[in-house]
Length: 454
Image 1 (cartoon, rainbow, N blue to C red):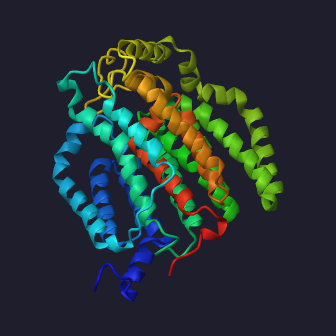
Image 2: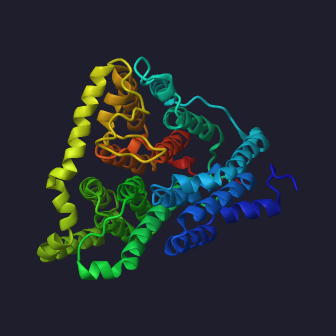
Image 3: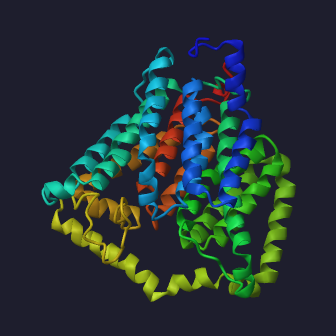
């Protein structure tokens, strides 16, 4: 059987892997891994499954959902560098799967130069030159610095170029591309909601003893992913079945339960914008949507006193001098770091601020905000590169008019908002997802492009 062809048996396998049944199976597997706290080895095994999908399927879109579920595991595994390094032997397997896919399916690759390639190249240039002139060779060539230079600068270009060349309308899917992507993002959102609920169930007696937010270290990352995915939940409720709107409301509740201040503030802003937009554009379900919103507002008004008590952990952190000292201190440091080397900044791998933010092994010493990150890490070069990219993205998004343009625009806004208080666009996984969404929007510019390829 020629794996690069679409024989009847192979096509059935590919359609199954791209279908809803396999999506449910993946969700159940991911849920079981979370329930049994098996996230590190579970992420490795799920990674192997992604490799199999990459080898078997000519459509890379099929691998996106398990990759997003995989990201839902990895965000829960902070301080796990030593545990993950034990699986370094798996890297050749991943590389083999990627190379196999590129070589075997090369005839289906149609090289294209995307509109966002140039601004992305400028950003890659800024990440590579960041810190030049002030960093020592030892600091510059650390594994952490080189890793993030690659994943934040070069990798998005690779993802953008490759997906632009191979992404086709539907391929092995039985549904239009917009619905497939909306289901993928909704499934990821639903999984994170489940993971947060499972955490509360697992720690239920602690909650009963002291009814309050149960904080966990991956709360900001979870909220970032949910804000990326949330617009597609509303889209699926509008285009497929209104029942999916329940996942949107559960997502908002999950962001609040996470204890993330950014999730509470910016997640609420995004949710409010999406709710108003849904009421305006979804005329078919407008009355029931308004009814649901009114009911939620009434319930909130009734339970406000109790709610303030349950949310005191998050609320107190807004005014906590201990909590705000670090962030304000990092803001000040970003200016000092900029002035220390105005042209190219301190570089991504600069670890001189660990007295304020004791980052873990293998991670950057974040400024915890996108603007100070650009200022302190890349100087004037970064301001010009990231500024140009931001303008180019706004111009790019403003020209699109397909069905998917609206959720992708809202997803972009959500990521930019949360990036004001968290790494966001400087975390590789979120940047890759956003890049993928831009490719989708660029490759399917019209509503009638969302058809299935036989």
